[in-house]
Image (cartoon, rainbow, N blue to C red):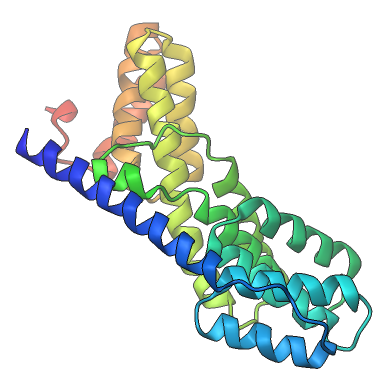
Length: 254
């Protein structure tokens, strides 16, 4: 009970701080003055550097609207994407990355835009309040994670020399674990409802596409149990052999 109380306090505090931060940022935003594109860009960059992301969005948006074909138009859009990412506005960030990629497929910063789109999609996977409360949401829809994975893979494949390639590779490994956990959660769901064929297929999918991963062992256990229930002795034997080769101390082998 004490732990639950602490979690509630943490969540309340987080909400309070978020509200104060949002209020302070909004108070710093003034009407965008009538200046040249370059002068406004200097103001926008100053806002970005000082963490005033909402203010930078307002100024950058004004530049993008007033000077859509100017010499700094591409950089303005790139900075807007970053600012939307920082304020957690995934919808606007994704829309802007999609627009940029559609209109500027040969731009030298294309790898950065793919990278930012992946990060924005990943940001929708994070939930501060679930983390504080210790809620396991491995069963939530992994669509955003899959899209982020595809963009990171695109960077590694199409832009192997990109400065974002190494981090993309690292994040792909993390996403792979997230997707494996999702598949395992679904497999357990089917198993609990005695949908043995569906549970076994989910387990096999983990073995085929997410090895090696911590989810491999429980996936094999589910496959063995399901094949046993279904009377599929050959498949059960094969799964037991894979389990023995990788996890010789597993209790199902005794």
